[in-house]
Image (cartoon, helix red, strand yellow):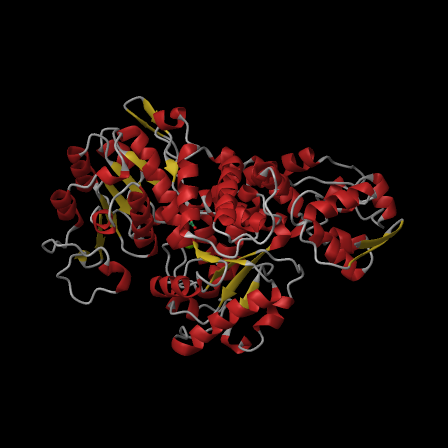
Length: 597
Ligand SMILES: O=C([O-])CC(=O)C(=O)O
Ligand SMILES: [Mg+2]
């Protein structure tokens, strides 16, 4: 049980057992009227706020409170709170509502001249008042996602050293070997349920950005909260900095990372191993999301850890799941099934092979053999069409090396194979040129054209190009957002086929069930769920993913499916609540102020 003494401002709460059931805690606290202590009593992260307060014994007061981004409310502190928490005189007299504060933020955002300035402004807001940051982000997700995420986050990573203000997350270098658990222990929050980790070697389609890649784990985790409802205190961004091979960064005096070429081989492997073990030790059962590692490392780490550790690779499995969701939706327009398709991927890296593998699993569920299913997926990489006769093919590409004469040119591959869908995951802009799109439109009544590379500057073609060159017939999706397009008087709202539709829901499902592994079936279920959430109206305007303002509902639906699978597969570590959907909905973080007095 919990021992509680409450002496006006000094609150001591001691836990004599770890809290498996946070709901019990919330109810308990509600019962004794201490609920008001919580930033938001509902939600898995609720206990963490209390825990950190427990540590210091006293509720923070004075400037400590104003400078605590998890608790700060700025001008929204009430007169009573100001009086009791030592804030009198430290704030301007006017007490604002959160809605008025939101107005002020939006007013300032509109005045900023560039998206980079908006990114810096929002990041600073996140550093001083998390509740307000998430309120603004959630209520304006469609407008602000392109700022906190792709494409602006890509630009932010390119300029990370210049715009650096406050650190976010944990940086691990080879000098920390043997001490990683201590480093992780330095993080102020002790209940961490999800880590996004990168080594910065392949940041979006931008390449090796070394330690400047930290913008990506930080951005992904902001979306875990905004889109999946995971309490912000439960997540931790990590960058493993083993150097960079990016000459520009190595020569930049403002670069924030280790100034030497990438360390590879055993030292690198051991460092990642130690990190994985330390994370398990310090935060048992934590979900680890691998993000933006280079191809070989990404595949190797996934292979190595997926059966023993609760982990997944977003670029392989998350992107695969959202791409498959897009294909399911597209088929609602074209008719037919997955098994009737022929997919041609441009790019045979993480996203391409990941999607191929997941599509193959889906086709096998529909009755195809492994062999037959793989034959529906073709890949063009930097050397041309992947065919059996090609020498020196590496592991994962071999599965898709079919009998065919070699072809070096992508357009020629389109003409020869007559695909129903082309899927761009190459990181190479403009590769779906007019000739390619026109050929696809000649071959197909409704050509499926996915231009998934990020950020926008790396897209294989733009939405406008896809619609113009296909005479408005393309079924288009892109990794980064495009504005609406009007073609011959018809309005198209192109969809963003980004793994943000997948990872927040998967993460929430894994956390709610305390799953010990993340399985293929979960990503397949997530893909089917996203596709199911697309309405006929969406499809009519060319949108094959649900609108972003609905993303929390979509994430909840995914989380329920994922948790259901965890229970079915015997991977869950907590007992199943009677009403899973209600239970998970109840765990979702809502940024709202509650009274501290
Ligand atoms: O971050 C994104 O927008 C999607 C993604 O994982 C990537 O492109 O690496
Ligand atoms: Mg990524």
